[in-house]
Length: 307
Image (cartoon, rainbow, N blue to C red; front, side, top):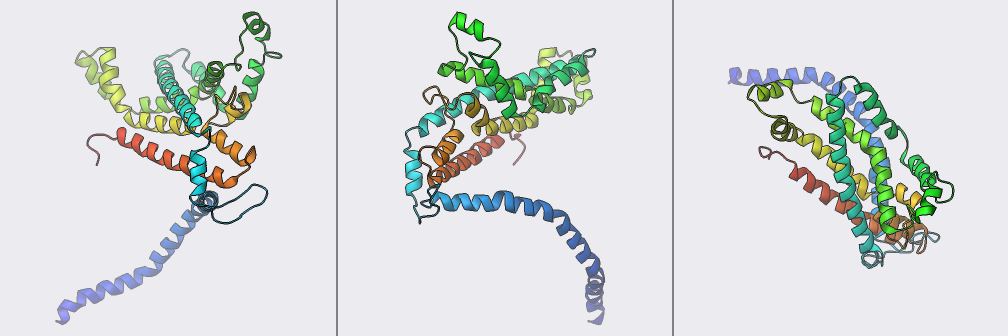
């Protein structure tokens, strides 16, 4: 019996001897994690809790909290006259920008990967617009599109065309701005994915007699699945939350034809209704939609062998 209990006692004693070191390691781990935890708590969790409370409360902009108002805020949010129109336009804009940015990003990445003499110049040229802030780029294009001060003013007047004067013109003018601004960034993401594919795979395909199209279709695209997942999630999320470019270029016009869901939230909160409760309810709806869409995207790009 004594022999049986001796190992257990020895193990407990060794654990007690190691406990100060384990405690120091635990404290060190908490110290490393504390800045990130504090940042998440104050920048995400506390504002999220405030938004949830506001979405269930009667909260005028100038009067503050007036009492609970759930679920009336959500009902009024869904019944807003521009709610479904803004969702439809936001989805249309998201589909267009996602297809253009992902396709152009992949094409530019293949170009700068294959090019040898002009590789550095092309990479730098495509990345330069990404260094400019979106608000600054929107102001720049606002001047370029101006029918009075822009460089194309005389040409537009002679043709009777305005970049931002029609719904389709305003949409495609904004899409052009976004593609110009972000194409280099998505090229960089795609280039990282391409460089992560082992050269041995391409050499084996070349030995087997595969053409360039077969190599691209059967090797490059499947091995870029994680990169596609990342780029599409980033592009869809950013497009669904589009605000600065439309606020600066179109203000939601003409005739509310370019009103995004985020701009609608801004207008409900600070213009017109001045109701933070309804705006918060719209924000919660957008947050839930983003979570669902991102989960669907990640599941769609999951490899067959992943659980």
